[in-house]
Image 1 (cartoon, rainbow, N blue to C red):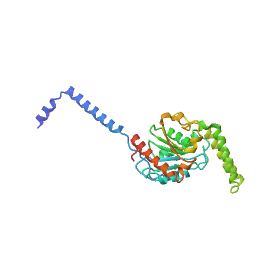
Image 2 (cartoon, one colour):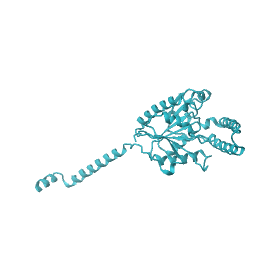
Image 3 (cartoon, helix red, strand yellow):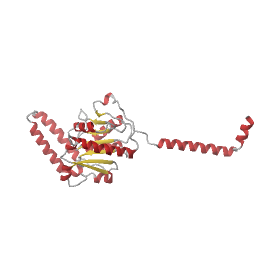
Image 4 (spheres, helix red, strand yellow):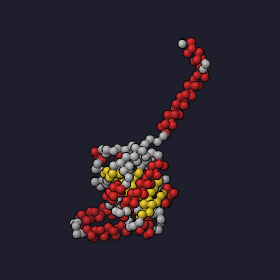
Length: 288
């Protein structure tokens, strides 16, 4: 048996034996590299850490797709996503990123996005990410996704206009809306409370309309409300100049906000679900 082994081993001469071993090592390393290059499925925390419960609200549980993280509007609201969470496919978990209660950085959109992205990465450890925003929350969603820095991430906007396009006209309109709401609220709020809320809203509005989104290669899905589109000078709401051909559009009938309220929210959820299914197929990293 020993002679047979030595005879077989002697077929490969020492100097060639090293090259054979080297080739085997290279082949093994190449195989490992190929395996590692296959995108790992997205992993996220199904059970939120206790210290995040005050900042992340679970709108809907689900498995099979990456979570969708919903951003606040200028007024700090996320309630408008409740109907969408109810109608959206069970495969998609939904979280709302809540504003800070201490008021830190609430007037700086970039800083708010940095805070939100740090929370998101504690729930989902790697991309691609799905970030959404309604109205003024759309610009925040794009900035959050930009800071999360995964090129395959998806931004979903619901009737959101690029603040750099709206400019002063948008600010004046928001300010007039604020005055109207303030007048209607005088019956139920004290002047001091109304002043505090109005001042905070004006500061956030000023920060928002002064924000200019940076050019991006991120994919953006924009749900447009027909009434908003009819009044818009730019049919892309200004996002075409930011993401170019990476912009996709869905048009929903009705006035601003109607797409997230009954009865239209069911149609919005159905369209979004189809888009998310296509996105997951393309991104190839959606399985949990």
